[in-house]
Image (cartoon, rainbow, N blue to C red; front, side, top):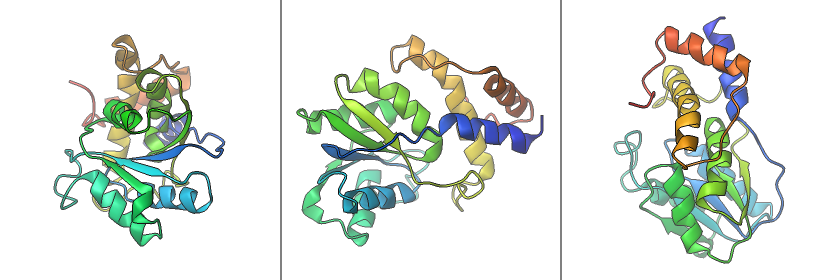
Length: 208
């Protein structure tokens, strides 16, 4: 299997794009990808919620990218995109997806339906994590509508993107076993693509 074909298979596996409905809050998961903040602003302006939470501390991929936390950087971008400051709440402690979701839940304990916005390639992890970390809430998962070829950024290139997708497939089983997320079936084609990419060296994001 060619590397490009294998990478596209993983991309399609990770991208879920739920149908969206009006919700109690939009939760933007902080990351190196500022397009997530802009997507949150688009959903706000479309009337899908009157509130946004941006969640995220400063991680390995963002400590040198933003002057403060991911949440604060995303807030600044959303304000540039026309979201009123008083519509935005910040969660500045989360360092991974489970904390993004569980810490955000504590800010809106009465929420019943939420829209979680993340990078395209982390949608499936969010979909699997939400039932464990925010039980009792209907979580709709979405992302910027970006293609695989358009997803790489100057500070997170295609190699890093593929390594990220490979690492997240590897985490599906172990994270479910540890109770962090619900189990996810790995189709044979996805396992084959994963094996292909590991064998040619896309291993930077594999769990220790």
